Image: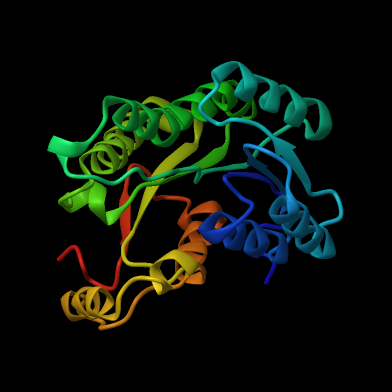
Length: 248
């Protein structure tokens, strides 16, 4: 269908997982994709090779999303190379789970820095470009944990909840320039990490999900595709839970 034909898109944390699947789906749908991750490695090289099968101009930039100056350099590279950015997907994120009484301040700071500050960094760095072209779609990856909270994840929940407030506020700031800003809140997504959980833990999750299954990386990527494309031209400031009904 090529829903993103001729569009330029950037995905942070795009070397693996949901970020990688989002980047590859965008390329399959006609976009030129830039993706970032903290360093070049086998995963980033493999992802780039997959992207370039569909979109030869796609590129990888090694960058720490939590570093504002490094993010500005990414924006300068994109401006110089492509002259515009149509879609920004803030996907970079980490976890450092623990109960609050056991959580170290450094683990609180690190999760907030990577998960929340990175969203600020990329939105601030690329907003002038989108304002000048009077168009753009920003998609911020939150979590169902940011909607409902979860024991043992105070830091992660705070970071992902912060993304929701940030998204709604930015949508109001940029809407008059035809720039949309939405958030996706994935639930229990089947990944390499979740597949390694004990069976009783997995069963507990499935029992709580109305659809009685975990989501896939493609489920989340398709939602990003919808928000990135012109199919969602009148949607901004929204949070879409991709969670099989877990947040109900």
